[in-house]
Length: 302
Image (cartoon, rainbow, N blue to C red; front, side, top):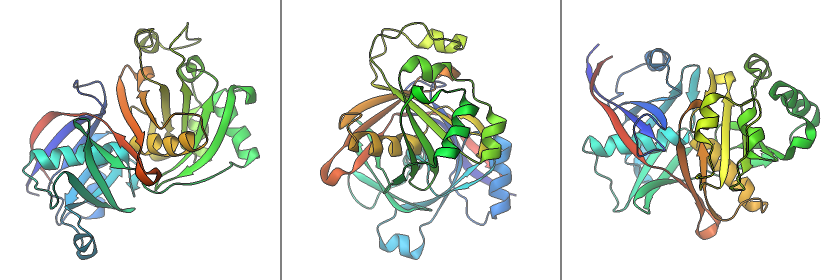
């Protein structure tokens, strides 16, 4: 074991403790897969990342660093809040991008570009594969969520590295009132992302938590409410999820459910206030951005 530079940051928020925390080990050299997985399980955060030098192929493609992303239950090829949080921690630790105004990260899905937009970094959403879900499986998932079919406006299987079943629901109240059967979702092996367009006329939230009642108010000016249920990877509900918001954006914008630029809120039911900035740019590339704030800085023995 040796001391390694370490940071813990909060992603998709400018105010500590309101977004999604991320543990970043800034030197993952010579750590085995088992050691990385054990540390990620120990942190009990939704994700923990390990920064490494780029591979020869990555360096040739312009990568500034390579990152490996672990949940308590396994490794991910890509995830959004670890992408933004790792870039922030790497810069804070003295990292110098090869190209001006952008960072290139190497991860399991290949190279991911980050660039500044409106004073914050945004990542280029990886290519999305999507399809209509199997009707029988969808019915079982809806039962695990306590949803009736008429509460779902649209559904898609979404793959951008991680796989999500995306559900567009009728209203924000329904999203915030969900009390899923997480054990059933784990058995099904299905991660589920639910969303609803905000009408800016939030009413009473049926069966909702105290935190949801406190945070959902007429003052909320975001456009979309999102929740992410990820029991198959050891996370009942993720506070704020970049990969899900990226795939939701690619789907919802393309199909006309959302405009080409909008803001999403996530974490309300957990007492968080995550904010995700989405916009579709040139060549239909979707960019997903968010603020990041440092919370812990020091060393860890690994």
